[in-house]
Length: 343
Image (cartoon, rainbow, N blue to C red; front, side, top):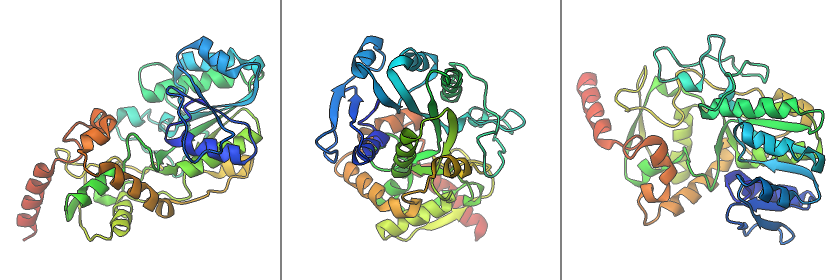
């Protein structure tokens, strides 16, 4: 497994080991999770070093699980080892889809750029063009290269939704958890709180990996939880876990100066069809969003204890900026105008 000590890898290594696989858990630091069975062999790997990857593969293996692959270079690393790999399971992304007018995740900042996908989105929905320009285009390039090698290397590509669970570098739940820990009792949600960005818990993603490893094939499958809660429902669920009460102000329309924006906020729903995974792999989710949420919130709360959120989650700062998620002054000013208007 490449990327074994990341958010998904920690759970997937354990799932495969408990399923009877002999697992080589490869990561840049060569570390291991305390919950892994002792039989798991942790190895150090610089993914960008072709010779190092070939050395980890050794004389061969039944399956390579690649959690950190992007673009043509990584695809060709795997296909170049096809004679020594029985099959592969590779994580892609649900962000690869575009709607019938060419709108996708990369066009959302443009006027009328929010994609309008079918609900739910099947794997047959068209994708953005492959290329190296963005996260989404690189994932499509990865997919195309790997699928073209299907005769020599069967690959299951899992198009993951919004991954959630402990050990995430960019946990969306931080948006609500930090507000509650900071004593905020009101929040604003754009688009009436109806935004849906289909999540997938690391446990469900690990289950899909486990099933695909045991059933080699060349295919693309969505990877998502059994339900797609609205952002308002997510906020309410986190309130419940932390036993807090919050007033949610539902604002129609897009965020204004960032107020009402969240890591799930989309104008139109993004919901993935899981019928193909159920049919081809016999997939059944091991958890749902609400059931898994306490573990995520507990991990977030502990990680924030005694630390500034920017130190605890530097990748979030890189993605959203220091004030992109927690500009309380702008939020309070918006609420003051709202209260005057409502009054």
